[in-house]
Image 1 (cartoon, rainbow, N blue to C red):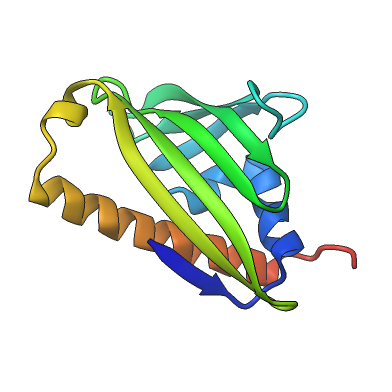
Image 2: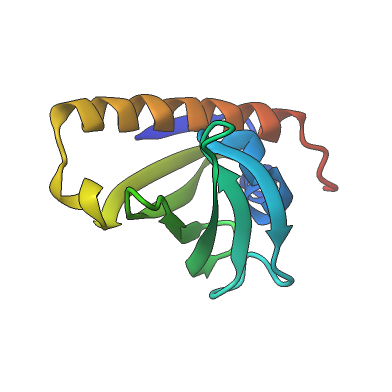
Length: 145
């Protein structure tokens, strides 16, 4: 899935690099509990709650790879459903626009083996909304030139 955001790469990256905004743009994440120092360096984690109250669970997302202003790869916890790997790639379209590519796949757990068309539709809709939210925040974000 992809979206062109009418903001420069540095503004979009600033949202990704601020772990405290994660629950604002990632659909399904309800609350940030903590952000490791050094986020988004490889191995750092976001500690959050996922899912609706009162059924929300404490989970983490871990940086697997980070190329500032280019690419961020996360292992996201979805337990008891499993784990996923999310890849966010930023490509400058113009000096004032960024193409964001979002890929997500199940890496472990029951959802990895129970993949259906319904799961694909739900994941597509979720990721579409996630990119809408990321765009909204990047467009409002104030980043020094």
